Image (cartoon, rainbow, N blue to C red; front, side, top):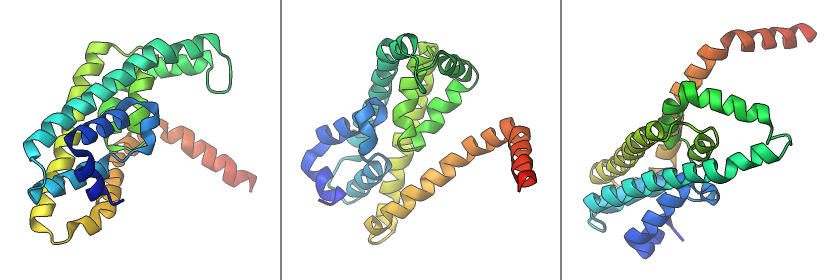
Length: 207
């Protein structure tokens, strides 16, 4: 079934449920996010959906989904690190997560919104790391609203000016992911440049 047909079949309630699950429930990684919002915006430009209702319902769903993900990480996920000692669930990994979210939690919560799969896990890890909830909620609201507004309105605008815009949805989603990933990669490179260069030199030297 085409995404357009799926959206028209499930309606506002279905769109809300998909955005909610994809934002913070772990099984949501298999659900469409950016393409769903872009296509919904496209359909709104054609009069099939009300763009105001879309913006309102999807913003609430995105913020609510992340909040549930945070709650799950805080209540359930943390216990896995405290009780289990495995490759992933190690105490040192928990400490690293806590330190990371103290320094970069706000950026992670906002930037992850534009990265499929990662946006599903970030609120859960924020809960595990016990990021201050008021801080998390502020950037959750900011990031969730920014993601929904920018993606739906982009679909609405392009649907109004570009003929057969539905053919370009995949390419637009890839472009959004690449552009939104750049700040995270630049930040990672600045923080780890020396270590990466040393490792590359050691690898080249061995060869």
